[in-house]
Image 1: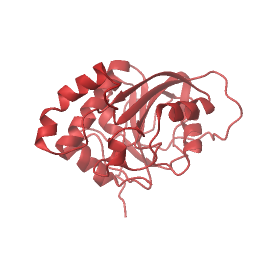
Image 2: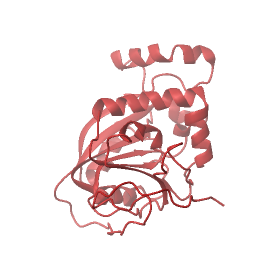
Image 3: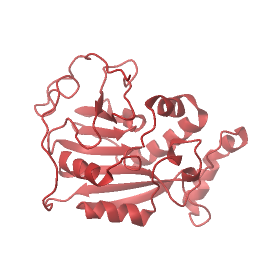
Length: 254
């Protein structure tokens, strides 16, 4: 079950705990992918908080938001790059994505296997993807005060096995968010120290979120992916590298 886009927006942009979580996850992503110059970067679920650093230099940035979650315009004050889509039917041509980020997408999908097939379809040869999911052994998956308390949490072994089953090459994985999922001021003040301690002595505690990086293998057994022609507007020009189109009519949720 996907969370509502308004709840996700309020958590990541309007609460101290959400802003802290956003920074920790984004910093780890940037340590792996410091730039994406001239590349197509796509996020699915509610991955847009992690995509902002790539807006300046990437050829194209697209934020895909699933229908049951809803969509919001993003980024604020700039041309919209967010698109409402089906979980397993993305309006992106096959093999045109260089970097793909999923957050609050895999664990809440009703059909994770088909979703992973769609991820594989849109990635180009050698393309990379990062999956951000709640850690089954962490505190964040046990609390419904954050978005990581919803959906199916994973252990590192479970997630890697599922990704390999869909022909992804697992490159590296990390655990982050060692701070408790608490809004209390005392925990917020010590959050930075706890993150440092967690990375130094990971056996002492367990991070609340798993981050796994994969790459697309050249060969894949026959799957269920379907080639999709991109919609006009946000996605126009993805193949030819055309300039960013003007913002079209926004999508409203009923």
